[in-house]
Length: 159
Picture 1: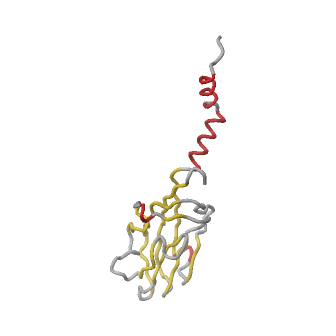
Picture 2: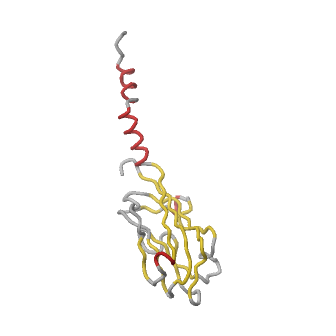
Picture 3: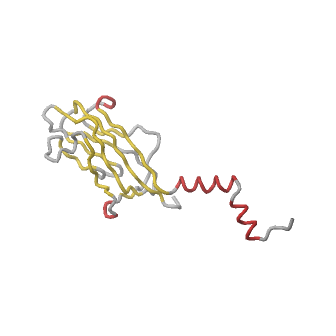
């Protein structure tokens, strides 16, 4: 059997289990990621104030949030529907600006709702440190309601 030339040897080294595992880990570290937060009055309560996501993972520093959306699974209510709800990550109102339950847009009624990050580059959100999703309730206590908040983000290769 003749010895391998340098180019063939290099290709062979790239296909070892260790090399394949390293490439897979790099692909998982970079690329597209998603995170989902479930917020429900029955779980977290509906008190006025901020509720920080109780999830093990943060959205990491250097991530770029490209898309976000809300799926309201139970319509939100408060005593007069004057309560406002906002969703944030890096700063106040940067995912969904505070909007009253009674607003004509019906943002907090059951169904899919848009967020600021809609895939357009102008609406991307740069994450400057590790953050968790925050839901902020104001004006009135929430009585009912539940939603799933979805964030889609990417990480640069050197993050």
